[in-house]
Amino acid sequence: MFEGNVFAALSAGVETMERIETLIDHPAARIERIVSTGQASPEGFWYDQPRDEWVLLLSGSAGLRFADEADVRELRPGDWLLIPAGCKHRVEWTDAAQPSVWLAVHFAT
Image (cartoon, rainbow, N blue to C red):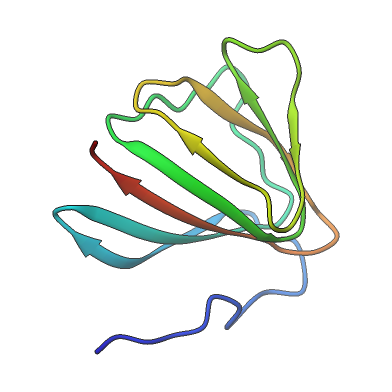
């Protein structure tokens, strides 16, 4: 049995690096906890992943940009997205005042 708490060990201040922790790694799916404290994707960088990603924002806020959309999507706690494999996207901003905690599930369809 595995157990944990997605809100455990959160930093109160801004860290230099976003934290990505693998909670479960299985051939069918990888589940990650991501903790952002004001980070964004580097200028000009786009994620282009080989697997689908379902992402849920649990706390904080964030802005995601998709290469095929003009506007940034603003996410608040409880918002989730299914990002298909090969869909170019980037993190434009994350909340610097409080941790933005994400739950990400990567899987192949």
